[in-house]
Image (cartoon, rainbow, N blue to C red; front, side, top):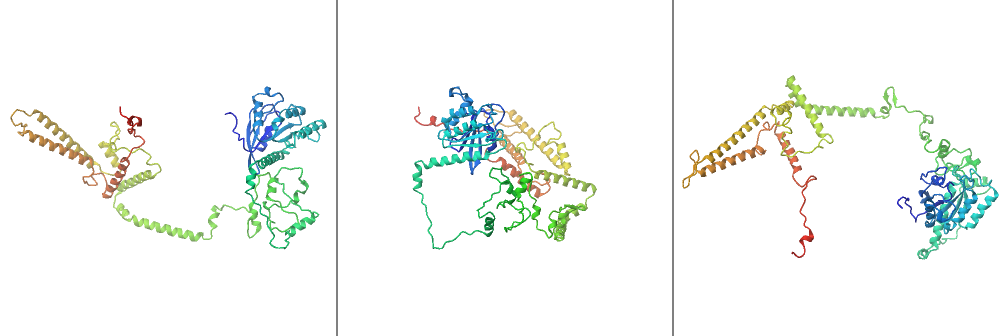
Length: 563
């Protein structure tokens, strides 16, 4: 079942059956969007193929079945049983194909015998006997005995059987076969619903209203004079012509009267003449007629330059240049181009003056610098511009943010360009034109202070360990202090060290902007703002990398009696 195509048993269905190589798959490729393999040997189609087509704004399901051979049911293989099962269980319109040219390898008598053997499966179904391959063997030139055999077969099948002729090669009768099969199935579905029990309940809810005359005046139908003249030309008969341009020819078409076909309402006249008045001369060809004469859809397109409304009609097909004498023609099309150019130039001058006025102070400062300082300032501005551009570019912040604890640490102690090294800091700050000697000296001073405080703590600890202890006697250290005084002094020193460390870590202690490596107070505010934004990312809830799992209490372990 998984290898079979998805079929809807309740939808409108056309089912094709017959002996192998009679033209079933070729017909399906003609009327649907399916692509079934067609080969000149038997049983090319080994399973059911489903295609879809449209008719009367409805979707139709078309099923191509494998060929069926004329032998008993118990001798049929799995491939043939697929067609037998579809015929037995689907409510559809059946198309039985017959090859009257006998190129399929089976005689007409064998095809008629197969029809009689599976005829019980056609019960309560609309049947169309398709006489195929009339391009190889026309129906009129077929032997009278074989023709009588087929006609008798169709006559004995009942009133719901129709015989049609077609050819897949010349496409003659293909649309007629499809339309007839669809119409027969639609009519049968309507009859089955009308004959059912549900129609009475529906008819009781319907009410037909017949209009009554408002007065005794007889109002005749109005017929235009052009229609009356056309009827007189055709002997008083009512003529309803229909254009066949773009459609397959049929036996009802009169090819000699093709030029006198009137213009349809949905066609556009090419070359004028569309005012609706009757013309005595030959009519102009429609766009659809010209399209089919010049290659069909996608090959020919109408020339819309004919509809241009110019002072001189001869100008319509002139080539429109784009570049003339090295200049763009579009620049001279606008009559107000000069006025617009003047306004743009005035606006540009005004913006230039405003820019120069805003940068006047900076320009005066630059004049007081020598050549080396100007070069340094220019390099600093270029680097600031590059940094700003890199910051504002898309994806510039697509990188992980480092925690505050390791944000200033060196990544690699063996890397000369790593941070926190005096040489690396000095080299980096020189690129920006900042003297880092004071900052480096301040850092070295703090390191010396930290080392001295550590040595002092170690000495106090050794002195405390070496102090004498006697029972009943006040304990004193090497300086002659009591034990309580030693403890108090040690506690005060520890607290002072902690206070110094906290002040060194935090930014609450006010410092000069130059001590922090910044230019002025505005730069300090910006730095604090950026620092706050960075801290905001880390303050809060869990993220994707958190592996913490909450403790869930199991209900059956914490309810009921406690044993």
